[in-house]
Amino acid sequence: MSPVSSEDHPPRPMRVAGAVLTASEVLAVYAGILLYIWCWQDTHPYLWIPLLAAVLFSHWVHHDTPKEMGLTGHEFWPCARLCLPVLAAVVLPAVVYGLWNHSSAARLESAHVWLSLGGYLLWCSFQQYLTQSYFHRRLMKIIRTPHLSSLVIATMFAGAHIPNPVLMAATFAGGLVFAEIFIRCPNIWPLAFVQAVAGFLIGVLSPSWIIHSMRVGPGYFFFHLH
Image (cartoon, rainbow, N blue to C red; front, side, top):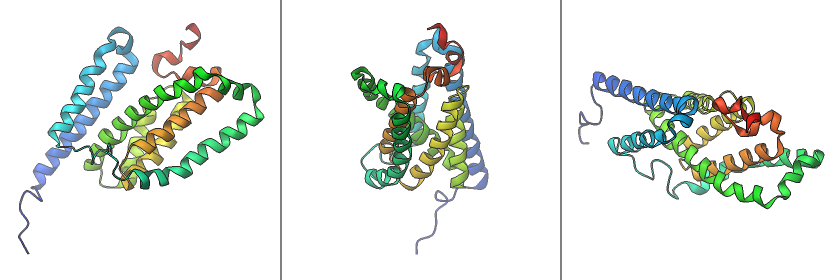
C-alpha cells in the first residue's frame, strides 16, 4: 500500500485557511447578487457581467469540470427519476386548481404564454447553475453535513427572492429538495426543468396581486406602476 501524501491530507491550518477563503468568496458573490437585485440593476444594469466573471474565474481556480458541476449528461437520468415525484407534486395541484378556477386556467390558452416558457427555462437553467454548480458545490467544501449544506443553499435561494412571500416559500422548498437531489445525482438540467414548470404555473395561475408579477427586490413594491 502506498503511503498517503501530504497533498491528500493538507495540514489543518491550510484546511482552515481554505475554508475561510471559500466562505469569504461565497459571501462576497452572494452579497454582490443581492446588491445587484436591490441597488444596481436599474442604475448599473451591466454589473452582472463582472459578477459572472468572478464565478467563472472561481471555476478556473478550483479546477471545476463540467461533469463535476452537473453540466453534462452524466447522472441525467438518475436525477430525472428523482425529479419525477417533485414534478408530479407541482403539476397535479396546478391541474386541480385550474379546473376549479377557470379564469386563471384561461391564461394558458395564450400562445404567447407558452412561448415565454422557453425563455424562462433558460433563466431557470442559469439559476440552477449558480445555485447548485457554484454555490452548493462551494458550500459542500465547507459544510461537511449534506443536509445542513442543503438547508443553507435553500435559505440563500429564498433570500434572493425577498420580499415576495410566495416565491420565497416556493424557492425555499424547491431549493431544499433540489439541493438534496443534486447531492445524490449532480445534474442541473432536470432541476431546471422542474423549476421552470413550477415557476411557469405559479406565474400563470396566481393572481397578479398575490404574486406581484413574479417580481423580487424593489420591483415587488412598485409592480402596480408598470
